[in-house]
Amino acid sequence: MLSRISPLQISAYTATSAVGVGKAPLAEALENSRSGLRANDFGDAPLPTWIGRVDGLEDVRLPEPLASWDCRNNRLAWLGLQADGFLEAVAAARKKYGASRVALILGTSTSSIGETELAYTQLDGTGMFPPDQRRAAVHTPHSLAMFVQQVLGLEGPSETISTACSSSAKVFASAERLIRLGLADAAVVGGVDTLCGSVLFGFNSLELVSTEPCRPFDAGRNGISLGEAAGFALVERVQGGADAAPLHLLGYGEASDAHHMSTPHPEGLGAERALDEALLRAGLPPEAIDYINMHGTASQKNDEVEGALVARRFPASTHASSTKGFMGHTLGAAGIVEAVISLLAIERGLKPGTVGTRTIDEGFGPQIRLAPEHGEVRYALSNSFGFGGNNCSLVFGKADAA
Image 1 (cartoon, rainbow, N blue to C red):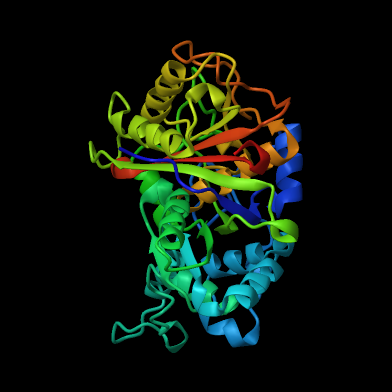
Image 2: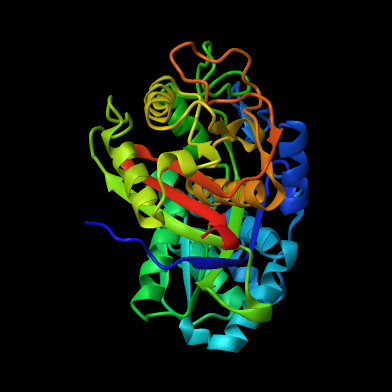
C-alpha cells in the first residue's frame, strides 16, 4: 500500500524551448496560444514536417574550459542553465549543503547522438574518428549529466534516466527517493534533448511524423511534431522562513507495462497505474486536480488511450490540455518542460489551451480544452507516457494547499 510522501519544494525552475529562453517567453506563449513550430529546416535533406527548433543554438559557444564538451545537446543545456537565475540558485544550494550532498538527475532520449552522427561522416581512411571527435565522454548517453555536473560543480549522486518520453518526468521520482533515503539533501533535476537525424528519420520510419503542425486530440490528427528543449528544477526538503518556496512536488507515479515497443496498452493500464500512484502519494482524489498537462502527442493511439483515461477518471470541470503544439514533442525533455508548464499554471493561475487543434475528436471528454483559461490552480497533474510502456505522472501543488 502506497503512503503519502513528504512534499519537496521546488526552489528554482526554468525551461528553454522553441518559444524562447526561460519562463517569461514560455508563459507569454501559453497565455496567447503562440506556437513555436516551424516548417522543418533541420539537416541537409529536411523531411516535410514541422519542428520545434531553438533559435540561435548553432551560434552558442561554450566557455574555453568546457569546449571539449561541445555538441548541440550540451550547448542547449548551457543555454538553458543560464536562464531565470538557475545557476545562482544551484550555487546557493551547493554552498548550503556542500557539493557532495546535491544530486544531479537528468533525463534524455538521445543525448549527444547528433555529434556522433556527425563524427561518422568524418571517418578517416582507417575508419577512425577525426582527432577533434575523439572525445569518448561526448559520445555516450551519460554525456549530458557529466557536462552539467562539471558546469554546476556538483559531486553528489549523478544519474542519467533514459526511458523515452518519460525520462525527465521520472527524475523527480528519483530525486524524492535519494532525499528521503538520506543520500542527498537537494537535487538538480531536468532533461535535455536536441534535434538530430536519428530522431527525425527514426520517428518518420515509424510513420508517426506529421507533415503539418501537430494537432493533439483533433479528429483529424495525423502525427507528431518533433522538437528540442532543455529544462531544470532544484528540489529540496521543505524549508522555512526566507528559504521557503511556494511550489511543491506532492506525488509521482511510475509504471512499466511493457505492452509493446511503441504502442500503449489499449486500455491504458500502465498509464492509469502511474496516475493512480501519483494521486495516492499526493493524498489527493482526482477531483482535486485543477489542471492536467496531458502527454497528448497527436499520434492516433497515444491520444486515444490518454483521452479515454482522462475522460473516465476526472470530472468534466477539470481543465486538461496538451502543450505539444507549442514546442513539439521534445522526447527526453518533454517531462521537465511540461512539469515547468504545470508549475507556471499554479504560479500564475493560467491553464493553457491546446494550440493547433481545431476540432476535438468526439471520442474524448469535455476535460480537453482548446483555449487558455485563468483561475486558481492549486494542484496540477503532468502525464508523460513513453515507448515500451514507460509511464510517469507527477502532481505539483501550492505550498499552502499541501
